[in-house]
Length: 154
Image (cartoon, rainbow, N blue to C red; front, side):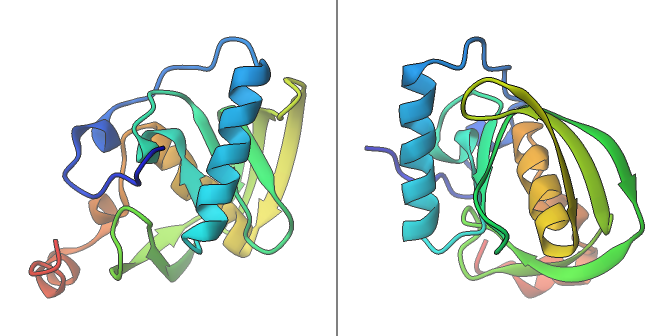
């Protein structure tokens, strides 16, 4: 149905548009994205990674499935540098500094407004997916030497 877009595809640099109504079509898309994320052994997947211009992402960082629809960061605290990968950069990992905790306001799969509080890997995954929805990629955080190290793979 959809393929995961790789680095260089213009949709990955686009700021996605908000989801209007959370309807049956959106719920089917969420189910598909969840299946694709698990199939590709990812921690998260944003709609633009499958070529869709929507503020929609799914993630599972070991604490259960989370759905982000039109997410907005309310607060972020702390800093931690860890290695991070991405389905759009297969086999490539960058050391990235991100907040340790996050509080996000988002719609869930039913269209209800909820608050998600997360820390550590789950917070990292949420920031990663929100970055995707804003057209920002992990390579944007990488320093010169990290980019040089992976140049052949890019």
